[in-house]
Image (cartoon, rainbow, N blue to C red; front, side, top):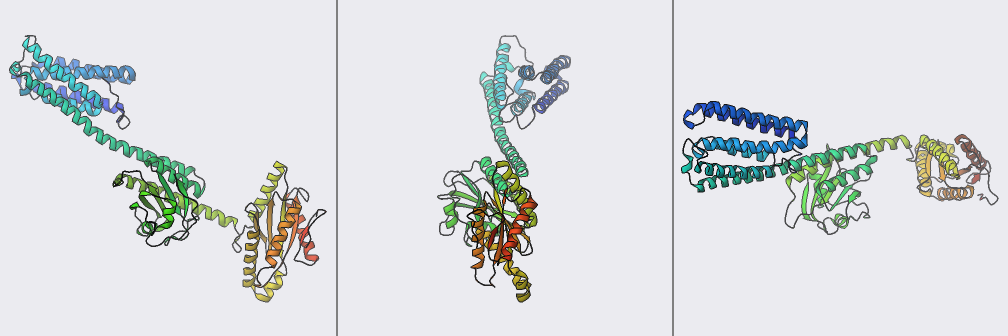
Length: 526
C-alpha cells in the first residue's frame, strides 16, 4: 500500500503522520487489552492478547524505525504494517463477536486514521483489505478453522457484506472531506507563498516603476487573471480627486497609450479610492469610466482594489478575472489580493518617497533644474563615457546678462522669477539626454552628450534666441560659452574653465551672444 498523497503530503510532514498513526496503534492495543480484562467472557484471553499486542506494536515501531533509516524501504514496510493492523483489529474483533463486540469500532477508527494520515488511496485499499479479512474469517469459522466465542457464525453473509460496504463508505467519505479541507489548506499555503515571493521581489525592486511591475505581475500570476493594470499618478501624489491618473504597470492586453486623465465622481476608480474598499463590477460603464473602458476594452468581471497607506490614496489596482458569466470572485481571493495590494502600496510609497528625496538632493530648489552636485556628477560621468567610447561632447555655460542690475531695479523676487523662467526655457530647448543644472547664482550649465563644437553652437544659439524672444517680465538676454571634449580639455575643471572663458568673451564683446572656446572654421557667432 502506498503512503504517497500528492494532495496533502506538502501540508503535514510525513514524519508527523507516521508518529500519529503509531499513536493510534498504541491506543488500539491498549483498548484491546482493557477490553480483554473488563470482559472476561469475550473469549479473549489476556495472556494471549498481551502477547499478540506486543508483537503487533513491535512491528509498528519497526516500520517507523525503518522509515527513518530508509525512506524507500520504510514506505514498503509501512504498507505491510497497515495490513498487519487490519489483521490484528479485524481478527480480534471477529473473535470477540464482531457486531456484539465494541472492538469492531476500532476497525472504523483505524480506517479513518489511515485515510487521513496516509492517503485516500491507502484508506480505500485498507477498506477492501478489512472486508476481505471479514469474509475470510467467516469462511474460516464455517470450515471450523476459527472458533468464535459469541457465535458469530450465525451472522448472515449479507450483514458481513453490509459492514464491508460501511467500511468502503467511511473510507470514501473520509477521503472526500479530507480532500476538501486539504485543498483549502493548500490554496492558503500557496497564497502565503505567493505573497512572500512578492515581498521578496519588492525588496529587490529598484524604484517605483519596478515595484509596480512586481505588484501587477505577482497578482496576475498568483490568481491567473487575464488582465490587470496599476493606476495612479506618476509621482505618487494622487490623493483625493484622482487628477492625472495614468497606467503605471500592466499585465495582458491593456491600452497603455491612453494619456493621464482626471476621473469623475461616478467612476469606479473614484469610488474605490473615496470609500477605500474593493469595488466589484460585472463590466466597465463607458459613460462613467471612458478612460478605464479605453484602457481595458471589453472588460468583464472587474475588481478595483484601492492602494491606501494610512489615509493617503496612491491609486488602484484593476483586475479582470476569468470566471464564467454571472459568477463572483471568491471572498478568499478578494481578501488575499487586499493583502497583496497592502504590501504593494507600502512598497510603492517607500519607493516614491525615496525617489522624491533623491530628486530633492539633485534639484535646485529655486529653479527646479539640477543643482551643482548634479552638474558635477553629470560632467564627470559624461567625460568617462566619452573617453571610453572615443566620442566628443560639449558643455554650455550660460549667464544671465545684467542680472545684478535687474535685481537692483526690480527686486529679488523678480530676479527669482527671471531665474525660474530662464531655467524653464533652457530645459525646454534641451534634449532629454542633456544635463541641465544651475551652476551658481545666475549661471547655468548644460552638458550635451555626443555634440561637437558646431552642433553645440547651434544648440546654444537656439537657447539664446528662445530667452531673448520671450515676453518681457522683464526681458533678459544671456551670454553663452561653449567648450568641447576633448578639444578644449579632458578633465572637468579644464572644460569648465574653457567654457567660462568663452562665456566672458561673449560678455566682453557685447553680451547676448554665443562664443566657442576653440571655434571651428565655420563657427556661428551672434
